[in-house]
Length: 426
Image 1 (cartoon, helix red, strand yellow):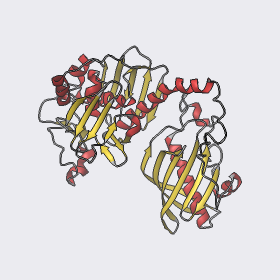
Image 2 (cartoon, helix red, strand yellow):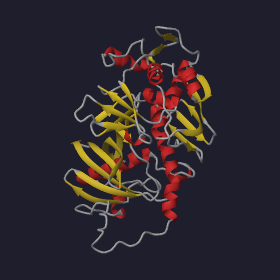
Image 3 (spheres, one colour):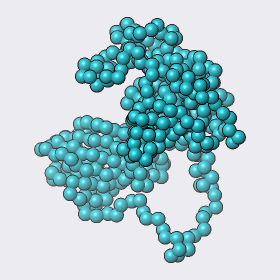
Image 4 (tube, one colour):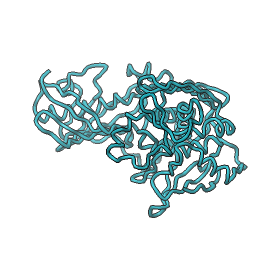
C-alpha cells in the first residue's frame, strides 16, 4: 500500500493498481457496499475491504485529500490498529493547502437505533466521541470519552487493536476461513480470558478501538464533523448509517433553497425534451388497491403496496407512494423523516406474497414471511418518494417461494434482499 498526495477538495480515494485501468473508488458513504465486521466500499464489481483503519488515520490527523494505492482488495492489516498507517502519514508529512478547509457543524440532533447499537449526534464546537462498548452478555463493558484532535488521536486512539470474541469466529477458524487472522493482528476474548501476544496497550483498549472505527467510518461523510457523538455498542452498520444521516442533514439547506427558489422557466418546446417518468408503465396484471386488499390481509398502517404495475412471467412490479402522513415518520426521525429499512423489506415481502397468491389462485390464503437474506439498505427513502418494488421469483416449490427483490427511487436501488415465504391458510 502506498499513500500519495492529492489536490484540494478531491477527498480520499482508493486506487486498485492490480486491476486494468487502475480504477478508483472515492471514500464516500454512497460507495459503501458491506458493513459486516468491517467497512467495504465498491464501484460495480471493484471493491476495497476494511477501509476504516486507513480512513481513521487520515481523519485523526486531519488529512482531507490523499490517494491510497493498493495491489490487492484490502489494505495490509498490520497489527489490527492504525499505528502503522499513522507512521506512514507522519513519515511523509502533512502539507496545508491554500484552499479553506470545508468542515460541517451539526445543526440538529441525529439519533439512530439499529439492533443493539444506539447513537446520538448533537451539536458541539469540536469533534467529540463518548462511547460505551460491551458484548451481548455485558462482558468487558468499557466507556471512554475524548475530543478527537491530531494529538489525542495519535496518543489515545490510534494504537487500539481490533478485538473479537472467540465464539463469534470459532466457526471461521475451524473451517479455515480467516487464515490471515492471528493474535499478532487482533485481540481475542475467550470466556473471561484476553488472548494477545503483548499486554493490552490501554486498560480500556476495546472501547478505544470502537472509537477508532467510528472516526474512520464517519469520515465517509466527506467532511470533518463538529459534533458530539454518544454511542452505545457501536457497529460498522450503525457508524455508516450515522454518516448517511449526516450527509442528509448537510443537504437539507440545499434542498430548502431549491424548494423556495423561484420556479425554473418553462422549457421551450422541442428544444429541451422532458425527462422520462421514473414510474414504469402499467402492463398485464396491473391492479389497484381494492384488488390488493383482496389478496393481502394487511391494512392501515401496515399495507405497504399501493398498486401493482405489471406481472410478467416470474416478475412483478409494484409501487408505494411514501407520504408525509405515514405514521412512522413521527418517531423515525422527528425533524428528519426516513422510511425505516425494515418497512422497505416488508414491502418487498408483501409484493412477493401477491405474486405467489395470484400464481396459485390462493385468494383465501396468506403469504407468511419466512426469511430474508443478503439484505442491504443503500439510500434513505423520504416523504415524497415513489418506491418502485421489483420482485423476481427464483424458486417455487409447492407452497414455498423464494424471490430476489429490490426497491428503487428515481431508478436508483435504495434497498434489496432475498426473501422466502410460505402460502397457507390463516
